[in-house]
Length: 248
Image (cartoon, rainbow, N blue to C red; front, side, top):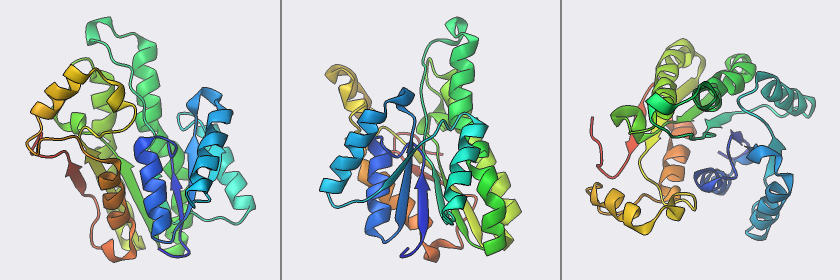
């Protein structure tokens, strides 16, 4: 991947950070986006921490749910002649509640961030990828897109829509040297997940045949595999990484 430019949305989270690091280890120049409700100081701290670990990532504040915010990002990158070769649509949120109690804001915010963001981030760069006849687009879905989850009608719907997007776009751009794939992680041991009560974690692990949570680096390695030039014959696929918890 040396010389390739990769853009990772939600790049400052647990899985996002690992993706950024592994892509960089493979030689890619990595740009990470963040939202964090405008917490720029925490983003700066993240970047400094990554520098201490030997990674020099560019970071951009972007609301992936807002098309204009995404458009501005690509205008800024275009002004610096930074063409994106690899796009990782990783940003996502939850707002869980039983459907009978879910309000319109909870539904809309999750759909906008998790699903509309794929259009917002991919549409501004797809023609550039087509003209250069190269691109790798990897969309991060979830185990709950396949099996559903109590209290997550909004999240499960948004994550299921991701793979529909993947399959349709993959057909459109396959002849242009561009691949589009989905990764569907199960329960991954990020800092956010590890804040869940220990007894709940134990119940989750009890449902996973391999007997443990996944690791962020396991998702990141899969991203690197699909993002490589050698994976050009894989497109429209959904790589399921859930420890056997749910099998299709």
